[in-house]
Length: 414
Image (cartoon, rainbow, N blue to C red):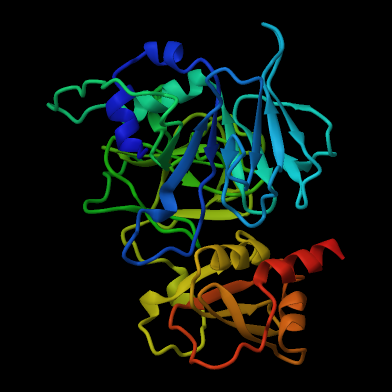
């Protein structure tokens, strides 16, 4: 079921949603990256599984017989199980079932058959790149209220009855979720010079992600959690809801949302009081640099040197290994069956990987090996920019017989 269908059927229930959905949900984390040009919303879609209605244990796996079936090559047939609490004071737990690629809770790998308690918004990874968030019903209700808020003057949508047993999976979009947090900004606390806000469109930039429009009166939450944030920064030092950017009559303001590691403007740590930003002023969150600009064009596009491409530069996909590790990028290219040429730079050397329909065709490394060995060596690179030219490589035999997932697994399991 699509999110719109979910909201149409359940969004008007209010607190009754908790009665109809008393158990938690498993919500897929957002995926960056390499999406089809004709499907710009693909990066924001999510799957959501309801952990009900009454089973004591739910098996997560790739097999059709799993209670929660995830069709991903990194997921074992019976990968893990989610166990309901035994009593009123108990907690849900997750148990790895000796899976091939492991189960990770909040970034830490679990031992096989060892139950681990789950908290609201805990992150669970079923192998590399298969990330979900454990969401309690009250948190989902907040999400539903935010998404179901009708436009001004629009009549409220009625909730239609639906069979929960027949439809337990819906696709969820990454929305702006600023209204989940109280609007406690006090104009008397605002710092700055009182200059009038610039006219025209403004955008929040954070390479390598797409620029986010800053609309008057619509805050943009930045954080690690797709449940709370409209701009998701995948970094362990970034809090679930880290900072808020808001365009107001007096300008654009940023405030920290009681994050664990802080928000910095021009190198100075800020607090919960809104701070006015000037255009281009740098805001630091974890390893990310954010700024407000009057154009949606990425600053990276004008500063990064790339190899010539037969397609326009705007068709190149750009990123940084610090924010999207190469192993995750390769697994996503394989999963989405993409074609093109990937170039990776580590500051001294350049690597090149051609791929067709998600499978590597050839690979080379400046001053190094070719084929699968070149890809394996590039997997050691932890920093540097990359570009993807989506022009399919010329036909011919594959020089790299292994799949991307086999090269990645061999590298990290050896």
